[in-house]
Image 1 (cartoon, rainbow, N blue to C red):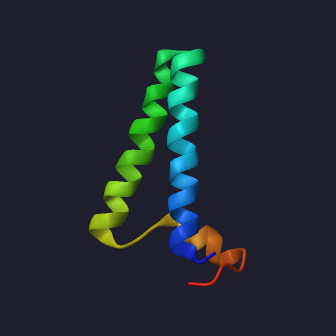
Image 2 (cartoon, one colour):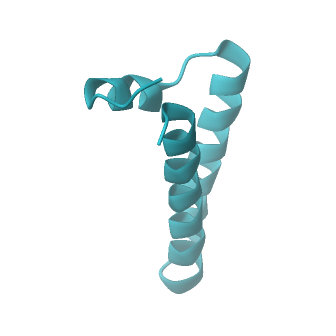
Length: 62
């Protein structure tokens, strides 16, 4: 998979996990969803993504 696909998969997993944690563990886990959404918004505006840098270090192709 290419980097853009990996980023989408990882973001989707994080959002689904945080929704499940919010439902089954504690409502404050919703802040994790807010954090992921804010990072997606920030990377869309600034064109800079930390996950992209991390995946590049693991050798994922752009």
